[in-house]
Structure formats: C-alpha cells, structure tokens
Length: 293
Image 1 (cartoon, rainbow, N blue to C red):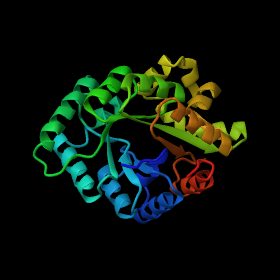
Image 2: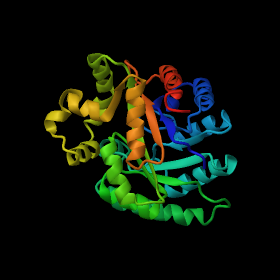
Image 3: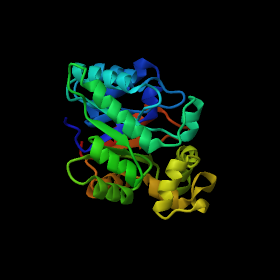
C-alpha cells in the first residue's frame, strides 16, 4: 500500500452530497495526496459506504475510515465490509476502527465502561470472522491515544490512527508501537496568519473535542490543565493542536510529526464556519506544492 507521506482527513466527505464527494476525492488525488479519510459521527453517512464512493471515483489514492465505530456494526459485519472493499480495490483501503466516546456510545444504547476490553474482544471476533471470508483482510489501525490502547494497536492491529495530538504525542506513540507498525496522526491546519483570526477558526474546531474525556485525559498527560480547556481552549492549547499561519507553518508541523515517528500524516483543513469540503479542497490546493506533493 503506497500511502506516501501526507494525506487528508475531513468530516465533509461523510456529510456532503455524493457528487461533491466524488469531485473532491478526484481533485485531492490529482493534487498528489496519498490518502483520504472520512469519519463516523452524528450527521455522517456510513463510513464504509462513503469509502466505496470515494474509491470508485479515484484510481490511486488510499481511502481510510477515521474511524468506523465498533459500536455501529458487529465484528462480522465490519470484517465483511472491509474485506469487500479490499477485494474490489486492492491495496487502496485502510480500515480504521475505534471505540468512540461515552456520550456517543450511550445514545446507541451501549455500555462504554470497559472500552479496552471491548476493543480487544471485538478484534478477536473480527479475526474469527475473517477466517470464513474468501479474501485477505485490509490493513487495520486502531484509534488510540493512551498507552494501553496503543499497546493493543501494536499487538492486535497494524498500527494506530491518532487524533487531536501534537508531535510530542507522536513521539510517545512511536516508542510504544515500536518499529513495523503504522502510525498515522491527524493534524488540523488553518491557513491564516493573523493570530486572532486563526485562533477563532481553530476554536470552532476544538470546542467540541474539549468536552470529551478521552481527549482531555490525553491532554493532561501532555501538561495541560482545566484552565486550558475552558472557552474552546487556551492560546497555548490551540497553538499546540492546530497548525496555523502560512504554508511554512503547516509544512513545519507535518514535518515535526514525521520526524517524531509518524509514517503518514493526515491534515484536516479548518474553515471559519465549520467543516466545508469545497474550502478544504481550496486550502489543499495551496498546500500541495509546499508539502512536496
């Protein structure tokens, strides 16, 4: 699987009309990005179906799920869907699986009390299901932040997909994963050099994540406190999580993740009024050459 060094992560691919998603995927591939990832959350379409739409609209780019929630489909369904895509598009589909967040899981009627145990059992069930399937499975990465989930990513998957993290976390994750396992962090970016404007755009993005304990607990291990989490995030937190400024600031942050041990970095362009796929493509067009694509 040829991921290259830089890809794209954007929630808009799971929300925009299919025609717009096809056009965006084709353009992002044309620009030279190595991967394109969609998410699963409230207001998003099924990520495996969305992946099929993007794969059908492109010829080379790798498509990933970032992430497909293990609560949304049982292990046999997840395995079957992933194998179907890997069979139809060899070396072009990468399955990202995650345990999601307590607030989202409870609305589905599930119990989130033991996420690590649940994930381990789910992977075991997927392994059993795959024995009955006619094709090899695609690479599998876990949404992971803290050491125990990163260890599970190392031991029972092909690596980890990290989110809302700085290069410092990437270095820690690589030490836990060791060599030979994929490490794919997401990096939010804002092409805006005015500090006040850039941080305002960034806070439209960070505010929701700063209500989720998984992210807060991980940030605390990096030295942040409750004061940093208030009002959409302190300037220090915003500057750590979101790369803002000119093209040089974005490329420097991507390089920092790669230098810290990432195999591939997926950038998420942020827009002033929330996720905007067309605006994201425009930013990606500006960034393609500076990123060396």
